[in-house]
Length: 239
Image 1 (tube, rainbow, N blue to C red):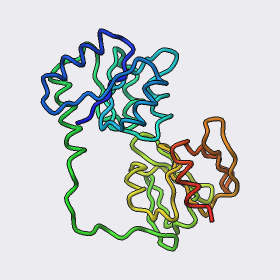
Image 2 (tube, rainbow, N blue to C red):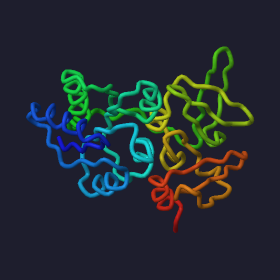
Image 3 (tube, rainbow, N blue to C red):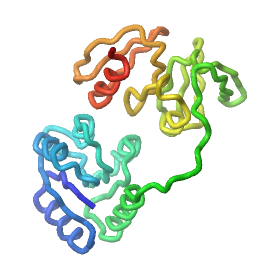
Image 4 (cartoon, rainbow, N blue to C red):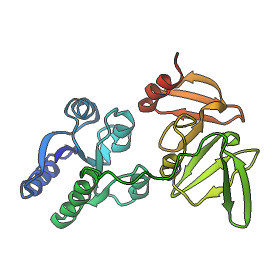
């Protein structure tokens, strides 16, 4: 397992190296104390797992993730527990508090191995839902039966997703990722970690300050497309 360490404390980096030395398949491919060298090395080395401190000089670990094209599995290592919710919203594999416990680190690597294990070929799943499919949506006591082509997009709200259609904003008991897996990728595009948009509802696209795009939908919603996803969006929409 190729591991890269991003940690501004030399002693903390040494502690992680010592703990990882006891794990036979832990291959440390590099380390950095700051955002810029970490970003460059991660894109070059393509590690499978990132041990990432939240607080970096002049930046945060979240800033680093936003700038990566190659996104490894991530285990946050920090002295502060207040960032845990934000970490798991970024699909972090684990969140370890300093001083790092050897058993907790080993458990985090077990999770990484499970994720990295080759996926077995399974029986075909349910067919993807496309523009003409009708879907049943429920939020508490309220229910709707909606054509997918009429839904402008979905927005992540923790472990829920909010649908946008006809002035309605129901909160669905599904994650954005689970919805993405059910929907035709030719219709719905993952603009960012927080948004899934209907490509047919795009009214305008403009460059954004984050080197991505700002997409305006026909219903007035404006959605930021991350730098990482901007290239994929161009490929879908270009001639």
